[in-house]
Length: 458
Image 1 (cartoon, rainbow, N blue to C red):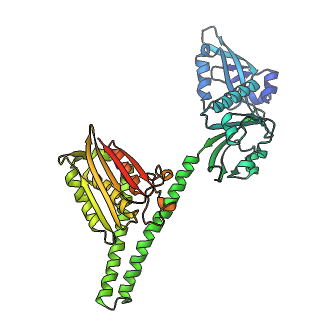
Image 2 (cartoon, helix red, strand yellow):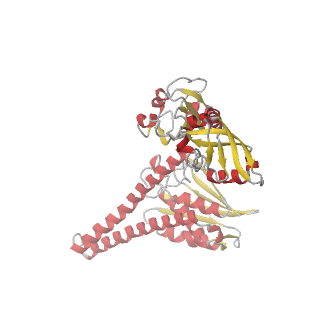
Image 3 (cartoon, helix red, strand yellow):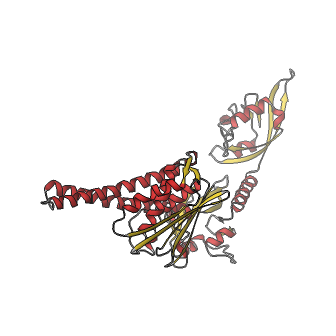
């Protein structure tokens, strides 16, 4: 092929005409862009700019590979050898271009590169390569683990003879098999059983096609998104929990208010007083619940450690604890507080100190079914930290639950203590506050022997 300084084709030999599918009158005089060169290749490279650069700086493109197109729209790769032809005035007159079709070689290189990238990805990313008939041609160790194929060679097997044994696809098999969809994302779900945890795999399907629209291979990359799905389920559970927790006091408040409005159930002053007490109690529950939620959201979104003041523990802790202890009417409280160093102070927000202590005490009271609830708080200096220990005589926490009580929205009531009102945000809120101020929190508990919560703050 010959082209002039503007990229217009001045000559194309018989082989070139047959290869690209053009008759002489359809190609001679036409620009290479839009005829045999697309504006951009599949990687996004600007081929218009490349052609302009070739005619401006032909010495840079003595040998060049680029994507081309045929008259019927097929994409091909050509290795070009370009020789600039200069006129007597020394200016570029035309460029002689000799091309060799390297499409099959290029597609093979791209296929191998893609397969290698996928195979060398993180060890938890499974990779399966299939033929156009969906027969497995290669599979990495992560994918073998997902399909319980370790030590086995599934080569030659139809992938759909394996998937249904373990997983339920999020879309129909016929949609996955449809090779007209060159890029596709779907999920494989393995439900939880007594032997296995639930597993969610996000599958990226990619078809690598030859220039002549022949499927070279099908690559499936499998990503474990179980943690992400569990978080989504936690959020859904949270929404259900909060909906229930909000609805209960609101319903009682509305019903009580309607009874008072209609004069039902309160003919005497004493009955009216009891209904008002019900309104106050449920409104207080609702207020505490919303406050707890707002505090939790605030701590998640803000750097609360920037809010600091000197908090004297000997003064602040009893001030926070006493109103809560006095509010308990149906149980006896035996409270003791030991802080030998009356000047001991920590640098944190007083508001969040109160939140930390009130949530701990609330939890101790809520989960203790003893006739007399014992709460012992001791504070001591352990250079360079301050240590708070809160002990109780409650039922204790099973060892298998102890790592979970700091998880958001988790409540031991589901497994151990029965139906206890709450959101499951108390101890997670405590941990977030302590962590935000550079401290640590740990727990020691024995069934029937009570629990000790240890907080260490700098």
